[in-house]
Image (tube, rainbow, N blue to C red; front, side, top):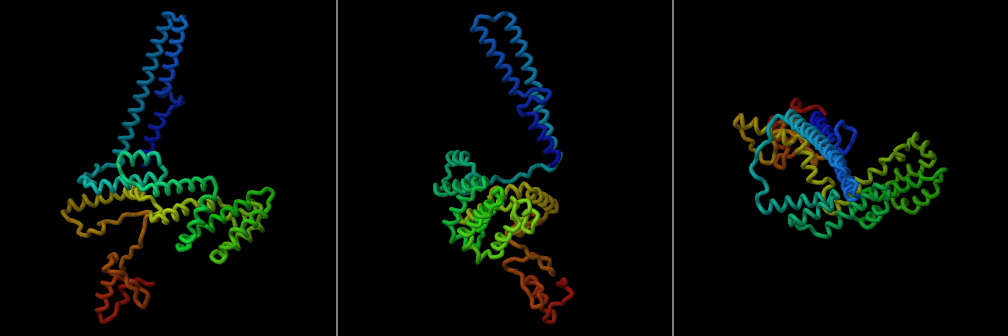
Length: 375
């Protein structure tokens, strides 16, 4: 994608309202022309206008028109180069499919997915316009919950853990049912911030905060609690950054709270941490659709069909965050396990699929060791 991105950057630079280029931007040329018109109007109203004034205005208009024409030509050429770069990168034509989302239920589901995406990503103004125009129904309570989510996330970006701590206290039973460390990590962040904010170093406010807020978390986080107390011996911050507790001085200790809080908040609403529409775009745009279409073309040329409705004929590489369940491939048959053919562990520790175990066990009642990889 280096070629298209490079041309796209050139297109962006050519359309910016900047005077750095050889040709002024269209906006600059129009502003200059308007300024000339205002000056002539002022002279007309004052009665000081002459024939030379209109002649100069005519020349200015011709000059600005030439600048605009040249700038538009430059932009059009940049757009054409972007198109050529895309054609060079993506040699295969876009696939054609039957119309999707034709039924009323499918359209409603798509509209709801888009509306929820806009709400989850904090685009509330756009979401309200979309909801109004599409007619999709979103409960006001759910809308308010997303507003609260982004209010708390904004506070965390400002290093204000107060709103997040308030939510965690209200939902403490839910967090403990998930064994979530969110509330402890929020208190830890505040403790470290108090510890490193004083100059010269004065650990008293941080120790007082730990006694009041962190003591109750000792049974579940004893090791981390001891590290928080022991790091006092390595103050100030410059010394702590060179100590065995350098991770406590890292900015990630605070910034990692944002995705963790979003995960727990969405879990309390029965939603995944990742935004579904974004996941679909990342996987599809990341190469999955191109691979599927290529496999489809190859199978069509060979006049073969894929009979499995719950599997793909090719492997799609996914990022770790988009792998939602493990996949077991039998070392004997090389087939992936299914609900009907699950993995089975033998007494020796090897794991094969149920079908392979049943077939191989018929050979004198045992599985030959030569068909299995070493442990």
